[in-house]
Amino acid sequence: MIDVLVIGGGNAALCAALMAREAGASVLLLEAAPRAWRGGNSQHTRNLRCMHDGPQDVLVEAYPEEEFWQDLLKVTGGQTNEKLARLVIRASSSCRGWMRRHGVHFQPSLSGALHTARTNAFFMGGGKALVNAYYRSAENLGVQIRYDTPVADIELEDGRFVAAYVPAREVQGRQLPAERIEARTCVLAAGGFESNRQWLREAWGQNERGEWPSDNFLIRGTRFNDGVLLRRMIEQGADTIGDPTQAHMVAIDARAPLYDGGICTRIDCVSLGVVVNRDGQRFYDEGEDFWPKRYAIWGRLVAHQPGQVGFSIIDQKALGRFMPPVFPGATADSLEALAGLLGLPEQAFLETVHAYNKACQVGTFDHTRLDDCHTVSLEPVKSHWARPIDTPPYYGYPLRPGVTFTYLGLRTDETAAVHFDRRPSPNLFVAGEMMAGNVLGKGYTAGVGMSIGTAFGRIAGTSAAAAAGHEHPEKENRHDRETA
Ligand SMILES: Cc1cc2nc3c(=O)[nH]c(=O)nc-3n(C[C@H](O)[C@H](O)[C@H](O)COP(=O)(O)OP(=O)(O)OC[C@H]3O[C@@H](n4cnc5c(N)ncnc54)[C@H](O)[C@@H]3O)c2cc1C
Image (cartoon, rainbow, N blue to C red):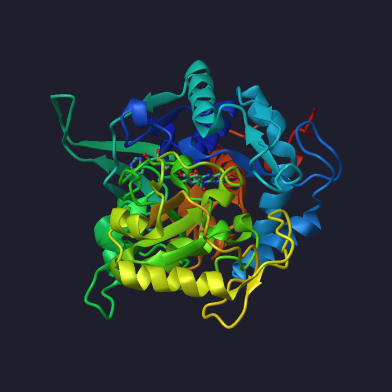
């Protein structure tokens, strides 16, 4: 019988598999996706947030534990378990040496990614390269890997893992039989439920206009995170954490694919112009704060608009001041023509833009600080970077809510054990997005998803191997010190 069964194929699962294998356990990893799509949401990532007390290879200055903790406290509004959060923070300072040993390379912050050179270590080649490196290393170490293997259920006995069920399925024209896979211990690392459209519908419900808003959401990451295991665990009495209606949501290009659009579909020009809904009305302060601090509220703002759609409008003056989106915007030499191209009601749209233009009090425009360009006597106000939209050509980008991940997960502790009635399972562990809600009850701070997945993936792998009788040579609290 296999020692450690790992369910999932993203960052958390791979970290768990590698640690368990390093401890000497036999490991089988089951990934729902085919090989070409392996790696879940992790394949779309760019960086991980790291604590450090002084400059460290790709990281400048210092980002001490207390500052990281305060950042987390602020974004979560206190919905975080301090013990587990600090465990993640401390682990983030020492994990990179281990990551490097498994083939991950780092690079300094990209020039377009503001304010992150101090806090976030970027993966050379992005998350896809990280995932590929981990798979390569896992294969070399003898981890067995099976793709196209979605686990549909878990068999438990008094909170003890017994076996996983994989249903009969067709893979590349071949009919594969249903399977029951036993193992001594198991790590669940199968992501959130953001790709389960029915569950999103249940969570978001119907609005006052009779719409099902979530039907118009796009999923930024993998289609394979359908939450089937999360739901089965909840149905079998596992303790949960987090709110099913909470999800990290960004405003992305409405023309993005339904799944896997990734990072390049984000529209980053919101703060440089105005955003209107399909009725041609503005609905929020586009210049409230720096874009990196605000981008994650716009998915939800658009979700509350009729038809769950918005339009980011800029003029020629904004060009070159934001990360260019992957799809070109609709372009016109007049606002009337732009309204026509975007399907907006012309009269209402023109009134909105003219009212905004009239309300602009242009001071000294500076997109790198909270400048003094703002509107007066306009509802909603635009607090900064308010300049009239008056210089053709004009550009418009359609926006939709893009779900990054959901927050509902399984409650856990510092050993990564799944809990039933507040009692830890002796051989079932959880890592990554499936438990991130313990640390991140709501909100987000860039790079923390990978910090949580790396820390808890490694802990879960170590705990699972230990429960199967294999001690890891370097226990989590004795992690290798980072070397440059
Ligand atoms: C576009 C985008 C950009 C992001 N950028 C960053 C970033 O730069 N930094 C950061 O920290 N975070 C980022 N995130 C968030 C980050 O991706 C997640 O926090 C992290 O990847 C979670 O890792 P995970 O292993 O838990 O889940 P995932 O990487 O999503 O892996 C889940 C795995 O489980 C598999 N699976 C699902 N169901 C089953 C099943 N029933 N049986 C078997 N396998 C199953 C999936 O196929 C997948 O392989 C980003 C997310 C997106 C969508």
